[in-house]
Image 1 (spheres, rainbow, N blue to C red):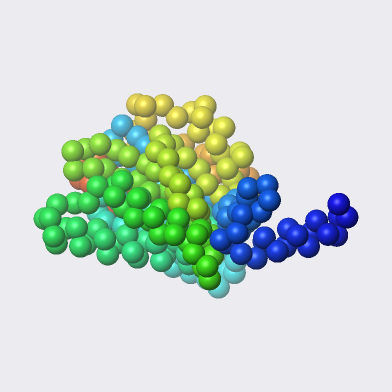
Image 2 (image 1 turned 45 degrees about the vertical axis):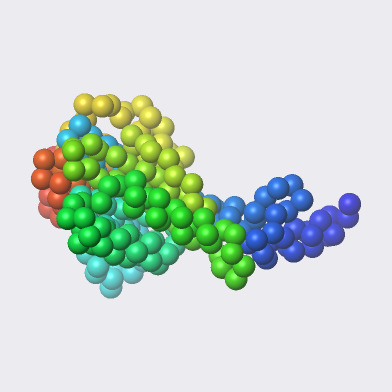
Length: 241
């Protein structure tokens, strides 16, 4: 077949989220995955006493206030999420998850379980892969926290609605470098402080000379208090000394 004709055919399937290409692909979904891979890096690590999130928040201008940039979001006291890709898409999903968590607390007088939050996010993502006039969410989220019984869980959600449970995970542009570090250095007996140090060292390995604490968004949820805590620059610098 003529190469130009192949390109024309591909572009036709390219423009509709509801149409499979002849080789069985949804091209808009694949483009959404590429958007995530180009997003700034987000890392999450489960530890013996909690879960930690360490994310890169690139600062495009020296006039931007670093503290005003969020990459890790509090869903509920015991659940947090970090994103890579289109962060405005992430905020829509996080806002929805926050409302679901509040409704659950009011209705059942208990904290929502992490899997219910993840499933609700992924149900909406999946709907956007089969509905005309919509586009896929261009974002992956790391969703983790501590259940009421003390169980520590971490999930990775894909742009098309799939999710997996992980012990440690990375999404975004640093995945190729950071993932082997996590594979090698993650251990079941890591404490929260050790997890934060591991996340920082992995992020530093990826960023190299561009690394500085202003562009790090680090948080944790401890299994004892089950409270989302965001770390300041001073606290982060104290950990790595």
